[in-house]
Image 1 (cartoon, rainbow, N blue to C red):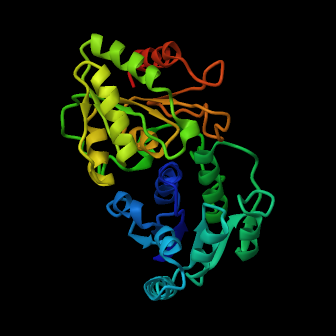
Image 2: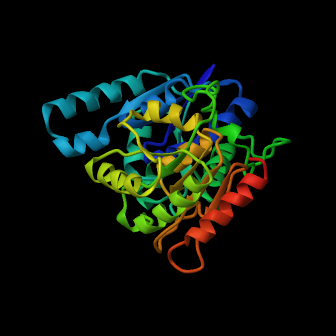
Length: 327
């Protein structure tokens, strides 16, 4: 079988939104064996994916922090280059459109497909591609699926629908995510790497108190000290809320899959909740809402708010709509 290397290094949300590409390739190009190059922090999420042969860990973020010229960084870069170049890939597909992802794709020695200069996030990346495609503006998950379909030649195959909203297309419930645990709680994903995406604590408390008054058990994840302190403040104001232990990405994935649902921001964990198949409300704050706002899967709703910040009432309305739909 021919081998294909997909490159989508980061971030967590972007990687998850790209996963339906594997579902499409499995269906329309079963002759291909697919590998994926991804930032090392996210490899555990992909390594057991049913439609993936191998997930290659790439440490670009760590190498940048410690210095690319450090001996350890240079050694690991050479090792990655050797591994990819000796894998005998027939094709490489850069779904990220950045210069760094294009460089990783070039390590494969294969013919690279990617976005044209007018579409790539960094136009210089397209100079490293052998095949370039121009796409109309569309939501990120749709964009990845169309690019892969054009590059791999199944765009016009019967049944191909890049706008399909079935969360099973992510393929995660069959791998890392537990399906046999009884749903117990709702998760409040209050964390984001960007401060402009945060929802006010008073809003989280208002939402949490409303849910708690209906007998809902609530859980609060965290990843760093600031997020832990915020989780403690929220838990102190929301009856019965639990501050979770710090978990690995794989462990948190399993906890999400065992939840009744989730409320989250425009962040990777919210997309992970959607991929886990649980009802999820995404809360968009700030001015920059990207091109995923308003694109909802069967089991998700987006709340953009009439003003800059969505209100508790708007978020609650989205949850009721989602609950009544049977998602």
